[in-house]
Length: 97
Image (cartoon, rainbow, N blue to C red; front, side, top):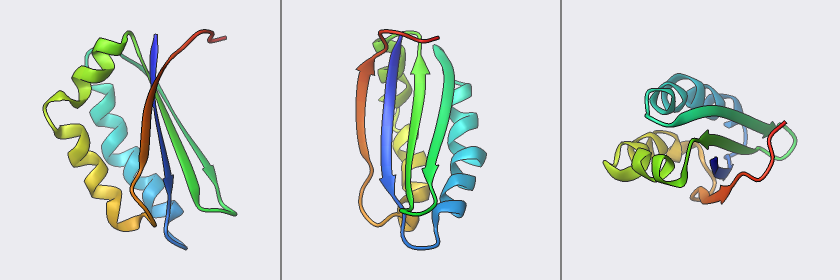
């Protein structure tokens, strides 16, 4: 299993709208992709930071979800609400309970 982790810092007062966009746009997009398993949205209301973790069957399925540019289109929808560009990374999942 493989994970894509996206960390964002929202502008002041924009955490709720950014979270809503994730749930309304990005989550349904991810769910429709082959190999998608699960998603988490973690937020810190005090700092405005949010972390999304999407889980995939494999690194290949995670990368394929980005290949046609639609993933970056989803990211661009939330960009006006962010204080800085999102940081993305992929990691192998070693344990999931």
